[in-house]
Amino acid sequence: MTPPAENKTALVVSAHSADFVWRAGGAIALYASRGWAVTVVCLSFGERGESAKLWREPGMTLERVKSARRDEATEAAQILGAKVVFFDVGDYPMRLNEDALYKLVKLYREIQPEFVLTHSLKDPYNFDHPLAAHFAQEARIVAQAHGHDPATKVLGAPPVFLFEPHQPEQCEWKPDVLLDISSVWEKKYSAFKVMAAQEHLWEYYERVALQRGVQGARNSNRKMKYGEAYQRVFPQVTDMLAEVLQ
Image (cartoon, rainbow, N blue to C red; front, side):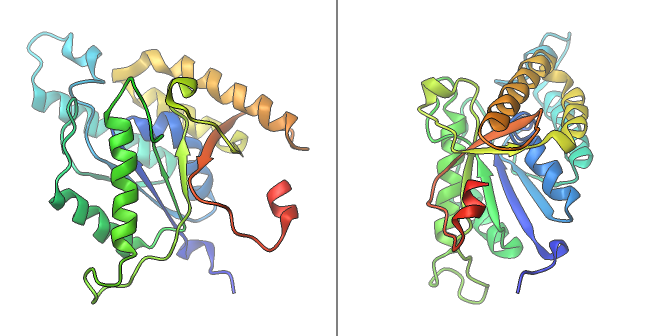
């Protein structure tokens, strides 16, 4: 029996505080609109490498940048309908220790996500992104281990989808899922406008969404305008090929 939507959950593991908005904001808003509980983990605030606009302001400090990025991500998550959790592990460089790993493992077991969204496994332009992807998947594996914290519920096998990197070809990333986000595009774009520290990316990611929308329409009978692309890590298991082909 399929559980009601309000009992379904999804997890997004984002390296920096804006990554989930650009790359997975449509999926987050779409599933939240269906009654799913979506949790976003921001491993860092992107305070060093992705906050150039803030650092140009006179007298800026690291703590002020972090605070501004936290506020942006919190508001963006609210617009999309998600809960956001901040790990604050730092960026450029990002360093992930066992405490952070077990914190994410605990979250996996608590929310029992139906699927996981995270970064591509390679990115020569940003080492934090593949690090976050490997971290998300290592935590998933530990959460599946029966010998880890036996008093808590073991995680099943949620599928993992890698969202689109900034330069797919250089990241050896190839999409095999095109998600129609036309119905929630306005929410995603509203979340864009909250991320004032990276205003230069608003137009770029709108073009990406339009491009994926065109590709989605060409590969289906959908009249979709906006899309997001994902790469699966594991095979899709189904008893109906029509579901896959549609």
